[in-house]
View 1 (cartoon, rainbow, N blue to C red):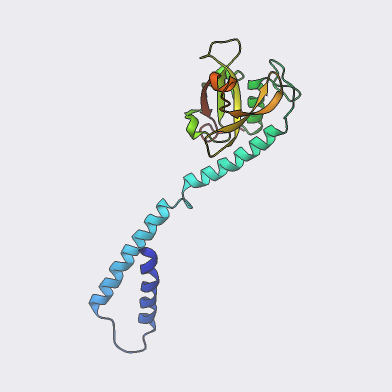
View 2: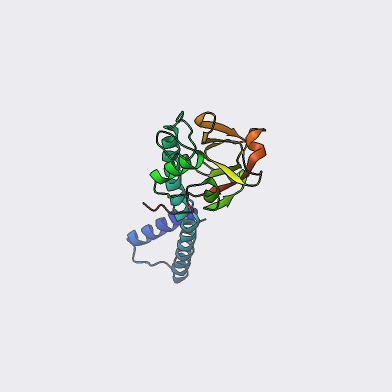
Length: 202
């Protein structure tokens, strides 16, 4: 409505100001014009307030998307790096060492173990996953409800499946599809979001 009224009002105001005759607009017309101006101003303010293009949330999401892109690209540089228990890079990694190394590069200091990392950030439902989120799985030695492995989401498909990067005991740093209908699906415990929840410390 505001977009329709504004050009009309500007046209009326311009014509009134440029009117060469000694006659003035009737008072009723002036009151109507002023009232319409107030309504259009309120409407435009409301549109700006709720516009996704001007909101702080939109700007934050854009920042997060750029940051996440840089993080996933950086993580990919270590594809093929060998696995070693207790290693935190850059020549070798275990699962939590790899995730912690990547996040630290961008100012996020995570706990050293996957079990401790699972206590950080914000819980995320599987259907709401986005790149940068952490996936947690039970390990080979612990029970099915005990966190023993962590990975980072790098891509989410339209069907809800995703690709994650992690330090695998058998292949080193590699990509993996999830859900896989097998090993990782059976051992999946949950997901956490760090980016956009925790602030970088450096």
